[in-house]
Length: 181
Image (cartoon, rainbow, N blue to C red; front, side, top):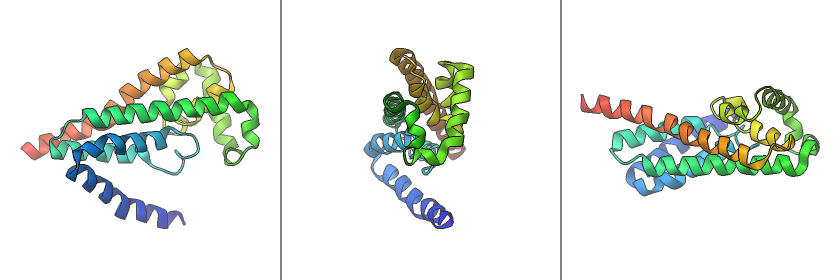
């Protein structure tokens, strides 16, 4: 099952997405939005390797000499929205979430996220964005822990701005540099 999914993802979906971005640069915003949202929304992030797709999109942008701004904006908005909804789910359901499908299957990851959040507080929102296993779980457990909305949202937005830039621009710049040489 996983082998078939990864084969489909790397050999069919990824070339299709990169071809779409190259042929229609205006689609970089919605592509980055959907990918970043899926990477940040709890439950979906375990299935979709969004980081890989965003790095690939950055390479396509670099090779195509198109502006990174639409993709960056899409990635920022998608990741902020994904984390905000995850936070809301945790805030609304609290610890009942551990008994709801699909979350009950990820109790160990949620416990690790909860420990990480209690150790670093609001900083866990910022740091978790850059640590794959915590990216989607920390906003959920921050909501479960009843973190106030504005401290969460400030850390969420600040980390999304930097995260999207870090994934999209270095690879794009490297590709552009090597193509010029």
